[in-house]
Amino acid sequence: MGSPSNGNLTRELVQPDSENAGATRSAAEIYLESLAEHRIDYLFANAGTDFAPIVEGLACGAERGARMPKALVVPHENIAVGMAHGYYNVTGRPQAVMVHVNVGTANGINCIINAARDNIPILYSSGRTPATESGRHGSRNRFIHWAQEMFDQGALVRESVKWDYELRYPEQAGQVVARAWEQAMTHPRGPVYTSLPREALAAPAKSAVAGPRALPAAPAPDPAAIRQLADWINAAQNPLILTAGVGRDEAAVRALAKLAERCALPVAQIAPRYVCLASSHPMHLGYWPTPLLAAADLIIVLDCDVPWIPALEAPPAGCKVAHIGVDPTFARYPMRSFPSDLSIAADPAAALAALDAAARPAANGVSERRARLASAREALRKKWQSEVKPASPISFAYLSHCIAQAKDDDAVVFNEYPLKLEQCGFEKPGTFFHNSPAGGLGWGLGAALGAKLALPERTVIATLGDGAYIFANPTAGHWVADAYKLPILTIVFNNRLWGAVRRSTHSMYRGGVSAKTDWRGLAELSPSPAYEKLVEASGGYGERVEHAEDLPQALRRALAETKNGRQALLNVICE
Image (cartoon, rainbow, N blue to C red; front, side):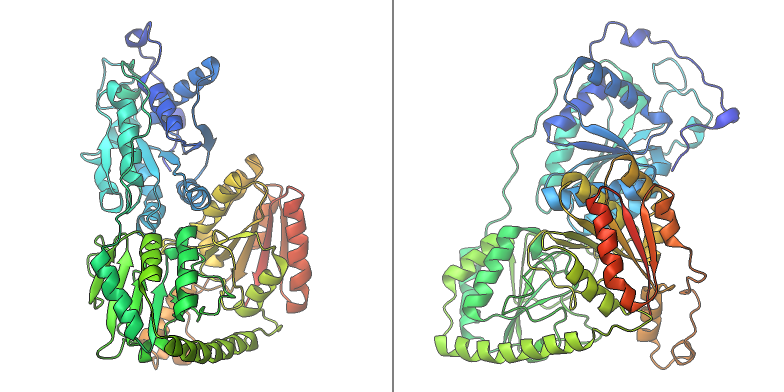
């Protein structure tokens, strides 16, 4: 984050305001009112010296009763972008984030990459160092204004946003918002970026507030392709659906459940980021394709970027593979080489409904497959249950099981790596969100806070690894929870380890020295801080849990605190 001031190193220079004399509204006011016209409720802001016109615009808007987003101070960019991400997850409405020039932009890129890979629309913006050295209202008046200028500030984020633009003239203010929103919300959705020079924002606006434009619909499925895939379903002995993201749309979840049940199509969720299918659904066959992949003669890859790991496994020869999604080829991935015999660019809900209408597999084949899959499903669940052991140190499986027992059915969980879905299944769409496939750490705490802002009556839980919790800038996160009365429960799965680093090393060097000797170089996170004290510093309830027998009661205590309006954190010491 760039500092809002440089203390005694900088002398404030007062600039003439004659350019704004008599003006009714500045470009900043038009910009803010246009955000509100696009149903943007919040501006998550980490302010700096570039924000003066925004601050003044908010004050002027409040004085005259103008409709503008509510501006929230968020003292770290990871938390700000995460909040916008989580708010969209539970409302379907994109929000705005504004950060400080190039340094603030750079600090937020981690979570913008997450949003890009998960198709989350966010109106990401920053100020821009004043272009003029004198002569205009808003010209440079602090020492940092020279050092913070870039030749191309948008280049910082260009590969991770759908669209970027720099406001050039004050009369563009409303239309820049309209264009940004239009591009963010057009499928495939994603973040956009606008840089906002101080002089342009401060100037009088001679244009109207802009409202939203009509958006193009997501692509409809090609009837010929649907007929072809329906024929393949009818002929398949061992079909398989693999998905990661179809749960972003509740209508698609319902359509998948109906098709899978009627045609006895097993569904495996591959590192799912949403509730793609209720855990109790008879065709829910777990969270990894093995062993179904090895026997498949038809695979439907449904809104899934990585359906399997080619270096570890692959479908058998002769297996047909179809891909379905708004962007079934994942065009923004530089390399992605999964086989494809049929590719259907379509809204998943529409494609699944069309398939349900067209597919007519033989009844005897469906009955035989249903019985076979029921046995496989039962065996899988017995295996998962056997992994739940109330021992100390606490296992991730047992902690996940206890969370499932403690939370209510409508609780919303934001998981950044550690929660085991095998032991903590979800029934309802919109109750579980996992971090983006990009894996930029520090997302989960902010996303949970954004969801709580949108759903104040619902229980919201963030399940985080200890590394992810550190990356989230928890001091800033707990401050936000306290300042805006967002009583979420944070559960830290504390194994004092970068688990991803260690797993990656062991998978690549299975017989290597680091595996044989349990060497933890570059993965060790000991000594472990008393994370429960961080939440206490912001008035929250914190508790350290070391023994399995204490865990259920600790969860109940922490959830009770949140229901009473107080944020809570459990620091659970895990194996």
